[in-house]
Image (cartoon, rainbow, N blue to C red; front, side, top):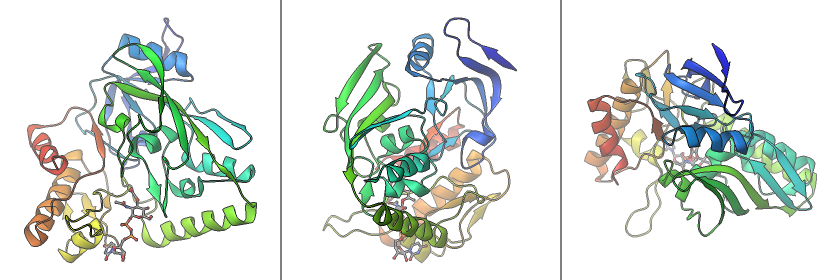
Length: 315
Ligand code: EPU
């Protein structure tokens, strides 16, 4: 049932099915789901529910099959993009491919990699998303963030956001900070050059990575760096363990790339996590390397799921 919150006019739903709000297409019901349109609504929902969880496209977030007891704030409708000279300011719910096209239309380079990332800007900033030698933090100047605990909007510099490989202050503290918007300094370049780079990215993704027709959450594990500085591919390690095609129920390692786990048909969060556990333990046994899971999770998980999570996230 569609309702509007009397306090802040925000659209919300009770007992809301999130299957179409995560790229893994897990069926998961939220007790309450809010669709915020602007920062006033975002802050207002957090004021009512300090334990609320934000969700963009859900492309890096595992939702529990048992559902989500905390209120979920869906940010996709908070998606304004403004541009002045080489600076773009983008709200958290803007779609990453749309941001790439907007930059291209204005002959601005720096966002070519976003063309194929099925994410909102907010998810991309929290994850410090990257591909093809570009990351979202490269061009970021600052971010407007709602500090849930202090109930105030603050501006954090790039340094304060503490970015590292697939990590940021926001990802580490989702119960404290929610992104409102971020400001980027891009570079003027020829449109042809930008288009060429976007096309190369699209071609790579089509060739090497599963499309969303095969529901997935992107790369599952970070690529590890060995103590001697050598960088390895998590997909290659899982592949060498012979796990491509390994299934638990309806979740399985993609046959063509060892770092993607597919929901083949209505898989559960438990099946998905059991596949991750097998990947983690196999790589540890064969190579003595502890992979680190890069995805996040929201919801009410079973004791077994919690135990797997503790193992694959601990490093
Ligand atoms: N490989 C194998 N077997 C496999 C998979 C890969 O041998 O099953 C080999 C490939 O042949 C290649 C190497 O491993 O030589 C690296 O694989 P790939 O080029 O597919 O890149 P990746 O390391 O798996 C990373 C990012 C992707 C990003 C691409 C392109 C991580 C964990 N993944 O993938 O990011 O799109 O590079 O830049 O950093 C994401 O983080 O969600 C993501 C998709």
